[in-house]
Image (cartoon, rainbow, N blue to C red; front, side, top):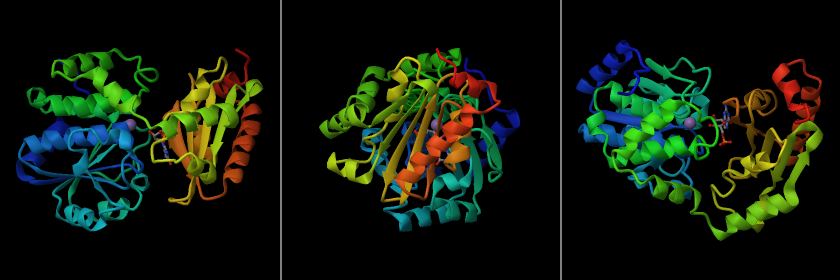
Length: 353
Ligand code: 5GP
Ligand code: MN
């Protein structure tokens, strides 16, 4: 049916945990995206269906475009409900770490997660998993963690327990981490899994609308401003840069999640293979960097070299504790250094297409 991408021993270990453990906590990365929340809620529904007490903790709140997901309002945001989060983490028998590879990606939850005596499992698709869990199910070739959660439930022999809610959450994660199946989505396995999700009566068209056609007027106007005034294109470098200051965001009535996907926009321009978006985040006191690339151009290398970050080859991110101007200068420095690089894939970026 569905390929088993996990070892029998790992699956057997988790099955054993499910026999004795009653209290599960699921934790995912800061500024959770569709895959973080989708994979977490899918596992939440599965474990709850097994009669377990389950809590999902996110380091900060999720964007509005995910709040329609089934039971999204039960998710505990550490930033808003730290006492409750501390309590469930303290009581947990098993902690499931989803959609992140290293503990710092869960922000302030890192400390209580590492302190917890619970058994820990990592299910993730980022490169270079850290060594902080008893079971490490890291599959960087997967397009999303949601895809892995589905395969894991199947490996546990419970495809029949995948209900419409679980399937909806899984599909949301798969869809969002591939930009609606427009990148990182060439593997036949993805569509094989989707065919099974459709059998659970998911409404994939409604899911698409809920996520991608549900924005505020302000977001669209901010997007217009970005495209008209803020997008810098460097054709000789096949690259583009967008920056947004806090002042600009406030002038457009910015709500969390409003800039989601902006980094992809310049890739619609013929010849642009690398795009960077820098956003001033006064709440977190950082400049958040989002990076996207096409083909072999390693955006994650740029993210780790210049923005203290990482991620996937074509979709990565990072942050710096400095001004927006300083972040912009890092972009130029990186471009300068890349244009003199010996790396073939990087040279490719500077070839005229
Ligand atoms: P986004 O641009 O959507 O925020 O992030 C895209 C991807 O980049 C994420 O799925 C994650 O893999 C990675 N990423 C984003 N921010 C960071 C960061 O601060 N540090 C690291 N290591 N990876 C990040
Ligand atoms: Mn993901």
